[in-house]
Image (cartoon, rainbow, N blue to C red):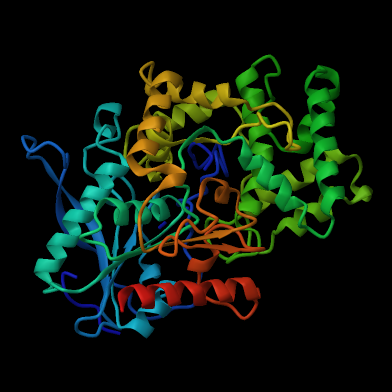
Length: 493
């Protein structure tokens, strides 16, 4: 394999390493995890390009270095250029040697490039992550970085006349679609996997889809009812200090829960719902990667526990699910103190636990996307313990009084106006989504036009089509990959 020339992606609100295992939908490392593959060859080395700090202010001459990777193994002169867009986590070079896009590259003679998103991984535009510095973190700035990267590489590598295709999953999937929308003269086609193109303040439907996904398990409605019963029993215990004291140890809390602190209680209840959301979001698709909750834990695993009467009451089964998740992540206990979480997310150092991506992604949700997965829907079985007000309070407590609901609503409205939301008008973009993935609710799941096809994959979860093919892949996933290939070949011919 030859790597030459100058030549990840995957929301609960944020993530810290000790307080939250799966907070507001964002797993460790971002939404698109890194596949575990047995690869013993040399991975491409880090390369760097100089970018402007503020792409929209010509008077600001400050610059920074952005990381990227190159694989020209399959490239045939004049072939397409595949651009993998990094998301809300470190760009992992393992993606440069595996995954569906690599298979496509080998068939289409493509040059493969991957660019890390500003403010994530090792791409640090500023000295720290202070609020003043985070003003330069936005999807618009990220797209402008990509446009500059495309122009630079075109000149540097002699790619004039080559057609570019952007790829991405989850947030970076949205960026892929938006790149084609805003820079159609640079990007000829795009694959936008599991892309939430519609920004939304109260994403209460997230847990509706979690419920619907639980209904696809072997235990189906029995499992959902068990979760609902467990939630009711738990909330009743939280109203009774004596009853709760007997139950507290079973949930492996790091310290006693302050029942009079509504934010601590909300944090606790949201954490327990996240145990299910994390598994649902990825389920059986490419379980062996860092974003998934255990390599063998699926919907059926959780529902087996929730319907096992030998464990005891439903709330005891709920606690056992929690213990399983903690054990999987090798965590000794569950820290549900709200202030602990806030304190970590307020850290501005790049070396802090939140500097991996939790503080940055939380900032983006508090300024331009929302995406708050709340308990406000009456359909889902996880109770009413973590409403929209809980998520909004975090924005205020982490970043300050300017990050109010009113200002966020303006930011969300601007995002949907700027990109189009559900009504995005970008030709030659394919939108793969999995039926089990809660994020499909904010994506394109029905064909808008022949050049905006939706590939809705029954029975699969988040970003399933991007991971390496497996002999156990369902027929729907196999066909989805074939359809994506067909669209690209037709659009690039």
